[in-house]
Image (cartoon, rainbow, N blue to C red; front, side, top):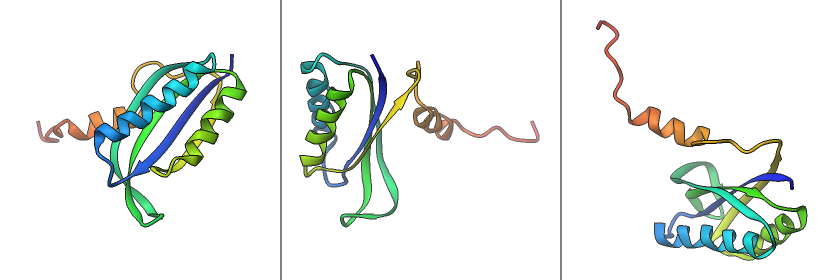
Length: 119
């Protein structure tokens, strides 16, 4: 089956529980249609480069999906109907990334204290 990465941006005024519920709903849509979500990552509340529907920030969520194209079409249809999702993007990939994504590794790098150059 084809492999996809699906990223959506949820409104800034949603709680983390509501964002998790959106991700769970997307997972259920995929699984009901004979697909499989292999990984779900919440990247957190991040600043946007420009305002989208009066939002300066958004909750970012990524899903790795192993499903036929029709399932992805249905997921995109349901996502576009949802008023809490302000943007989404689905990309077909050759292989799914194992372990944390680049965005999660970036957050880990930001949390680590910097080493002193003189030491």
